[in-house]
Length: 174
Image (cartoon, rainbow, N blue to C red):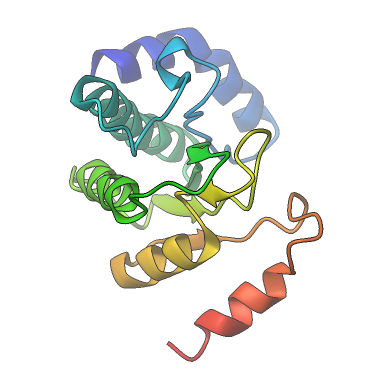
């Protein structure tokens, strides 16, 4: 709650800018570029770290609601995490179970789904995360479909790892 209020206080100029131009604002919670993102975020086995990022995600829903209410139009909030490993871990289920639980907790706060459109974006790979990403397209697409949020498919960062249209076509029958 305090984070959302502080954000509003220091970012009202963005709202003014958007109002003057009759624009909306989309919001990225940024689960990276922070000392508590040095290893893992929403999939961390360290409950203190994971709880920090869950609270951050919840605050970001409140911030997105603020944008939507101030601008009179919906706000898209894009969740994306950098979590993964360079090598294939022995336990591949645990991190994904923690990721799912974290998402469940973030989405458990009350918010108006007609004002805040939560998206979940998969991660194909990253520097030092070539072998195992917790938020793969299969995990994110299925989670989004099951929980009534938007699956965001990034066609830019895919490199030689297939096409977003493959993910979309794979999810349509469900």
